[in-house]
Image (cartoon, rainbow, N blue to C red):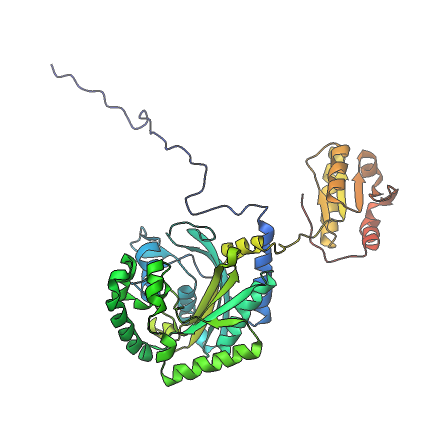
Amino acid sequence: MIKLKKVKSAKTMKVKEEPLVLHTLRGMKDILPNDQPYWEQVRRTTERLSREYGFLRLDTPLLEFSNLFTRSIGEGTDIVEKEMYTFVTRGGDKVALRPELTAGNCRSYIQNGMNVLSKPVKIFSTGPVYRYDRPQEGRYREHYQVNFDAYGEQDPILDAQMIQVAHRIIQTLGIKSVQMQVNSIGCPACRKDYRELLVNYLESKKLKLCQDCKRRMGTNPLRVLDCKEDKCSQVAALAPQSVDHLCEECRVHFKTLLEYLDELDLPYIINPHLVRGLDYYTKTVFEVWSSAEEGKKLSLGGGGRYDKLIKMMGGEDTPAIGFAFGVERVIAEMKRVQAKPYKLPRPKVFLAQLGNLAKKKSLRIFSELEKNGILTAESFGRGSLKSQLRIANKLGVEFTLILGQKETLDGTVIVKNMITGAQETVSMDKLVDLIKKKLKADNVVVYHN
């Protein structure tokens, strides 16, 4: 007799669930309420200055076709080779989480016909970017960037203005010790000869280079000049400098830029080893540095010209320049130098209620105060008047509005002066006008406790 095995149905089979992991992925973090005032300060400062300098806001998707980045950033760069988050969608599209903002902005410029706009077309953008790099202080796998780009103008006065904007933002955020580092890496024409000269020099020092730089010699030799390894830095110190091998056009462009910077009285130095890490840069490159502890310098951001990128991506021949800085790194430096974060407006009125009927009525009163721009705090979930008054005292409000069962039936509100302790009863329809008169203020945002 053949004994048949009993097969369990799908309904009776238990699926082993993976344990719920209650922490963020490595290299990603929450932005907690205690840190939000610093983020708000960065948001407000960059948005205000972008408007003042004539930049228009642009938001692009987090996901783009992956070859947008491989072709624009460069296949020999660390970002493309090691750091991009790429995957294939269910529809078969090869996509990537954006590792930076410039490529997506250029794609949008071409796709949406921004070339017909008055030049220069100035674009401001901000948001998260993703790089699968080793997490370190101020640089996470998900981090936020603020980006400024300008299209359609090749005059070096625009280079000077972009450097001025970068300097202005960092100083306005309270980081006063700022140094701008500038260099010119030339155009494709003069850089070809310089690249050959540099490669010949590096070949003679090849044994002293790290493994990454030996590989870079064949793909992106300029990156060797930017390597942080001590032995590579020693080789780079004696390498030929790009500023000594510029064509006449690039030389005049860089000379004129320095004259503009002198006119602006901006603190800058020429760093002949500054090349930036992306293939699309031409002519001007620059970085913003802040003095860190023990005399060291900290890079907060940077950028440069990318005059050939729009055409390389399929658009018209369009000169362009841009810069970006990392928000997390800037905030870390703000904290180090004890720069002030954004200070939330302090509520001057607290609305207290006692009893279910008063609680219902208080919602309408709160709404009327909010509509009239009166910054009001509340704690609707608390039933005890004593506990609500304790919160009002802690917030330091000037007046507490008390609404109980009796006041609700009478259509009145008790207005308590928290400084003198004096109280008066006023009808609900006259409450807003009375509070406005007492505070002598309007156009305030409501505060929720």
